[in-house]
Image 1 (cartoon, helix red, strand yellow):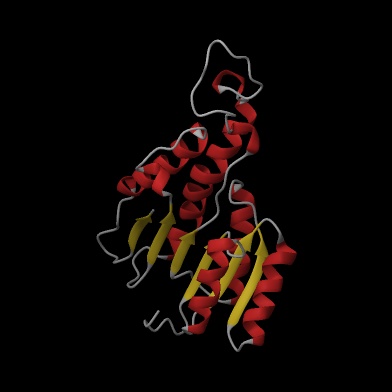
Image 2 (cartoon, rainbow, N blue to C red):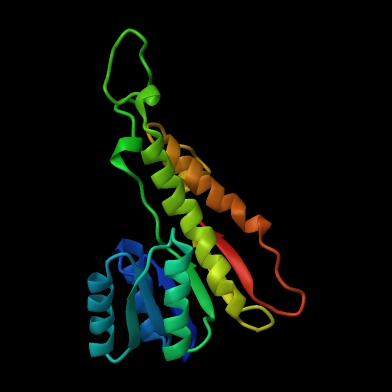
Length: 200
C-alpha cells in the first residue's frame, strides 16, 4: 500500500479477523487512525495494542454488527475519541456449520442428517444477519459521517461465491450475493464525494 492515509479515521468491522487484521495493520502503517470493531473486544484491543506498540494509532471496540444500538454506541465513542469516520470497511462475515449441507448433491435414496431440507431457519438467519445486515447496518450508522464530505469511502467485502455459487453453502452464497448487489442500491449524495465499493 503506497497511499497516504495520514489522520484518516478508518473503521473496520471484523477488524481483528483473518482479513480484517491485515487491513488494520496496513492502514495503521500508512498513518490512519484505525478502529478495530468486533464482537470480541479483548481480541480487538489486543490487536490495537500491537499496532500502538508498532507506532500506529488504533483502538479496539466491542460491537455487534447485527445490532443497531451496539453500533450507535460504538459510533459515539469513535466520534468522541477520533472524530468522524472517513472510511468504513465492512469485513465482518462468516458462515454457520448448521447452514452447510453434508453432500454436494441431494440423493433421494439416501437419508442424511444434513441435507438441504434439514437446514435450520435459525442458522440461515444467522448467516444472513451476520453478512448482509452486518453490512447494511454499519453503513446506516457510519455513512452519516461521510455525507457532504470529500475523500470518504465505504468498502464492502463479499466473496467470489457471490459470482460463482458453490455447493453445500446456500445461505452463505445468498448472503454474499446480497452484499455484492447491495452496493448498487446506495445513493451517493450529490453534495459530497464519498464512494462505495464492493469487493469479492
